[in-house]
Image 1 (spheres, helix red, strand yellow):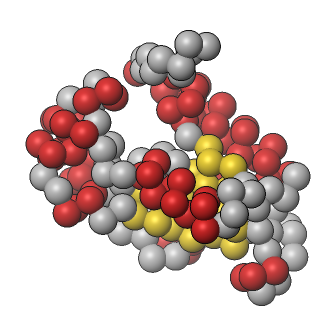
Image 2: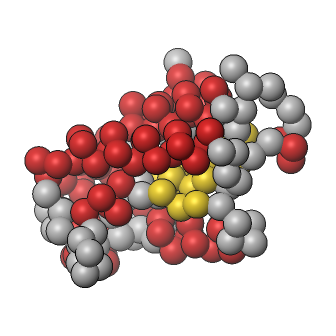
Length: 158
């Protein structure tokens, strides 16, 4: 395991959290700007973007897409990229665990950012904002219901 130094001396891993349509990508870009646009934003959604830039989500490919994004994160961590922002919904601790474990292995300071709109907007509003995703309202309701509170990495790894 890599050395644990002071927070400012280690590369940062920021794990975005929030329902579809809650502004995760926008917040991730704002955070990256605060870091001088020097790192990487990694999203599982990127797997579904074709060469023309169109988003073509296929639920049957979701597990493979998550593995693909986790591999990209590990590649970036092995090069000590700073910061790395994981721009996924990350509803449960299980969703975040691979990233947290990698971050710890590579000596990253890990923090979680939940979008205010995840609970500050209605499911109808979020669904309208995430119309491109094709996610049904019933799934979004279930995601909100299953959203696990996370205060630290210990909530995720325990």
